[in-house]
Amino acid sequence: MDNDALALAQSDLLDARLGPFFYCPPNYLVDAGSEYVPIRVGSLKHRLRKLFPAHEVNDAMTTIEDCRFVSYAGPLAGKDRGLHESADGRKLLATTSPTVISASPGAFPTIELFLEQLLVSGGVDQRPYFCGWLNCARAAMLERKPTPGHLLGLAGPRGSGKTQLIGLIELAMGGRRANPRDYFCGGRFNADLLAAELLVLDDEDVPAKEAARQAFKQRVKNFLYSGAPRIEAKHKDAFTFRGVWRAVVACNSAEDDLRALPAVDDGSRDKLLYLMCAHAFPEVLSDDEFQEWQRIVRAELPALLHFIETYEIPHHLRASRGRIVAWQHPLLLEKIHSLDGWLAMMELADIAAMAGVLPLPWKGKARELETILTGHYETERHAKKLFGTWHAKAGVLLSEAATHSERVYVAGKSGKIKTYRIEPDEGEPCES
View 1: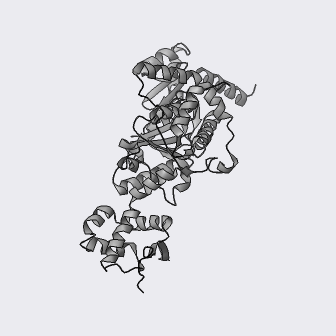
View 2: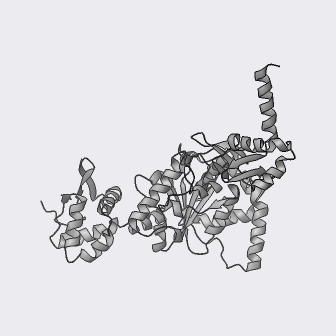
View 3: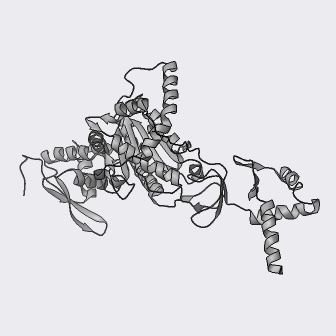
């Protein structure tokens, strides 16, 4: 055996003996069977003495620090326990694996009734959209393959069953959930999102101010669709990572609570799946009845998963992005649009038109319209509240009005500045 071959054999032997150990400053980690756990220096030395002569222990520790260094140690969304690489080549150690429940053929009548009562709402059967979305999410989980997925929005009355539906999604996705509020609402650090495949927010987690909501929407979109988002923890070097993630926002159907759902506009429409939930439980269940319901659902879960895994997405609902079309329940969309303010702005414009301060048809820039509406005594108070302190709000509302109303359209553009035209309401005299 030549020297190179000998050195390689010795390296392989050393690598095998150091197999259970890794180093992620300031901790060492050891393979404890079901997960990698952090240990102290004294514990590491004690373990190494069982593998190496006493005079080689320090050298073994140095080798671990040099050759078994990892930039991150913890759960990794969509990855099984073991060594992996970030998108930019850094070594990452998944300390645990997701708990993936196996599917098996069978009936699931309790879950089937639950989904029917929850998702057949407003005369629309939303189950094909949900099953298609979950089919894509489950496939990504089983294949450990990062794929884009629509943000799932669930809106319905309190106690309707939204929480129970999220619980089913969580079990289908590996049993790990995280709350992304801090990062999605503008925070810098997001390494905690590596710990779960399912990211869940409720209406209490979402900012109320318009500018913050726009930033929230952009963060969600970038994280779910960037392919390999930037991950950063305190006092650690950042890296990029391709994880298996799906995100759900749940809120009550009261008007103020619907602000938790990101606004639907041209930049986000194809990335949002919004479902309206009805009451899944006709009667209030006692604690014992609910516990029994949960037991039955858990027993039926493998059959549901088999149905989901073999679900054939209807041809008219298929799409390249997310494998299923983006969609928003019409009644829910109508409520969201009314809350987003463009309708209120149009009402103020009509008031200003009747007062003669905004002749219709009107042509101008968003700032000019804001000045008119906030400067007229009949519209001032409501306009200032509508536009707030966010300087771009008038432009956003005009863009949304141009999307949803035939009365408004973009009449020109100079650089990034758009010129809009507002037509009079039907039946209103038109001034030249």
